Length: 126
Image (cartoon, rainbow, N blue to C red; front, side, top):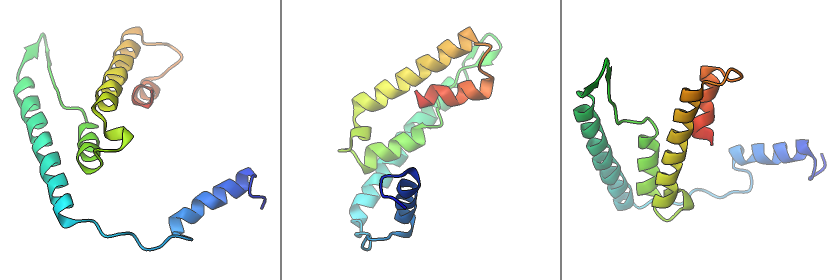
């Protein structure tokens, strides 16, 4: 296979799963893992507590909810890799606002060329 070809690139990528050419992973500091757990856990307790309180509010026939399923993944990124580009507040808040705005616009417009499950995948992918 040629290194620049599509098949060569796929094979190079698949070799990463085997760990070809890589050494053993470095150990992680247990204290760092503990603080990651504590920070993530406390953040999620606050969000789920808020969701529990807000979920009791009725607007017409519908209840309001504040919990978004991506909060678990985001809290892990924020507390485990705070210096990464993905863990910066601007990117986290901006990404959630952009995704929520896209979802609301799509739900309001209900384009005929997109089914509901495609819209559900499109909004967070933006």
